[in-house]
Amino acid sequence: MIRILRFHWQKYAATLVTVAAVPLLPSPYRAPAAVAAIPAIFWFAASLMVSWYVYDRGPLADDHWLRRCVLHPPGRWLNLHAGLDYASPALAALFPSAEGQTLDIFDPREMTEPSIVQARRIVHAPPGAPTGVWSSLPVATASVDAAFVIFTAHELRRPESREKLFRELARVLRPGGEIVVVEHLRDWRNFLAFGPGFLHFLPKRAWRTAATAAALRIARTFTITPFVRVFVFVLVAHASPCRVETHPDAHVLSGADL
Image (cartoon, rainbow, N blue to C red):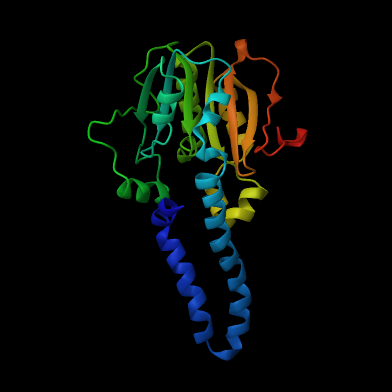
């Protein structure tokens, strides 16, 4: 949550200044402004509380959820991020006998949202950290058992760019391998939590479209808290019927959610 405050401090500061200025307005405007400030105050508090729950206290804080994303321990895994790599140490610990590769795929021409730019200013990549072009990954074809893209793919804002990324992930995947994509969704739950900020996320149909373009399909999907969705994609030729997995901390999906 502290990192989120640092990444978005301008927005939070603007909200506080706006709310604090309401009593200073002329009396005819004070009441309407106070009413208009109510959603801002709600989302200010809700976004911080949900972020604290999701990232600091919820199931995501326990890295063992990553093991549930794959049916079999991978012999070789790939982790893509855009500068904030939370998963690689956990993957190395969970699969100690596997070979792992981590790539920073940040592209300032494609990843233009202010939040990711601010995040990279604050959290600097270690010197010599491996990087890769998302549209042409430096990974051999059919060489990876599991690929992880956690809170990163949505930074590619153009649909055609996400489709290119998914095609690259499909290319490097071995037969029977799995691609794990973890994202917030542009849905009513994240709207309640983050207000207009939920537009930064993508609807679930965007992920289905990108997968279809890359000859992938959803093999499994489950939620970690009501606010975070995990998609597990496989090559169409190796896909089994889609099913939903749940655990005690997961939000149970209905058929309409798939």
